[in-house]
Length: 421
Image (cartoon, rainbow, N blue to C red; front, side, top):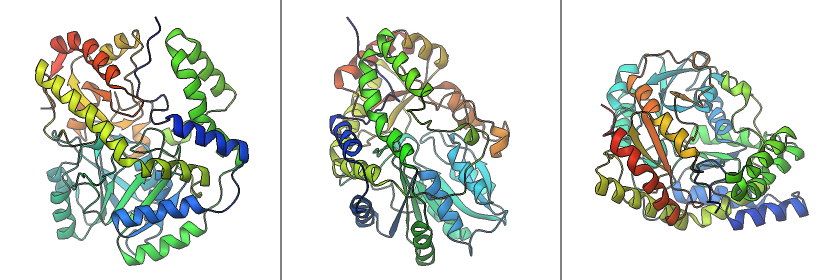
């Protein structure tokens, strides 16, 4: 009997509603009023305060923030980012002519360690970018105090978590700017797209000019983006017998699927052209935004299920994880994590999410070209080698989680770690 794949990256948020909406956009074309973009922008402003600006990706939104505040950011200035992050973050810093300065993470959250931030501050530091890694809230109160004391901009990266009316209140509440991403495996998905929400008036007026000057993505690019949920929905149930894998390989060879991170980006390069968020992608993101409470509650349910398994089996849990958090994924630490992922893959359980074996992800990034030197952030380097993450997305059913827990149990009994030392 063919089992469903358990996965992180096979269109994790492409539910039936998104697939049908994407298909409808393809069939009718997508020219017309920019109503979805306007509604999404207004929804973000109502939820977070400040002014929201939409771009074709989170990395472009971050670049626009740096370029849109020339009084604060000048060439050669420094932005503190964490080790254990995605390459698109330091790429945007470098594209703006700034320098990414890496600070280590803390054990409880996999996010910036405030003490490491203090040590990284120099006279050229202008901002701190804190990442709510996998939806575990960063220590924003401590980071806010540091930024206030040193007159630094605090940017919260909320790509992995968007709070709803149940919280968490410690996400998106203290930043001068919030970075949002609507990529394929983020808190919500528009397939692509990103936003920056700013709470400072000078930056808001300049960013409005940048947003209005964006160019449109080519029509063939938008078409390929909309094909993504359709192709993966067709291939996913056939992946365990190899047919789905062949289907996706053929789609890539025909360039029907766009890479999440390009070869140039893996070498530290980001284009300078800013693009508008496509209207169909804004509509898909808006659809999931309106369903955010249900999406988050699903993630909370699976977070609670994994917490119960940890308690029952004696698996170590990071102190920053709580049952009320809608985690984007649930982290565990163990020896031989790479070997365990490889063995589970034989059971159609795919836990490689691109955040393993690399302090700046994905694994084939040239870290020297994004300003990272080996040994700079030892806790981040340790985390990426020993981490195993469990899916919480809406394509993951409760029976899938139970199957995953049963499959993990013998491995974790032998190889588990309580966390990072």
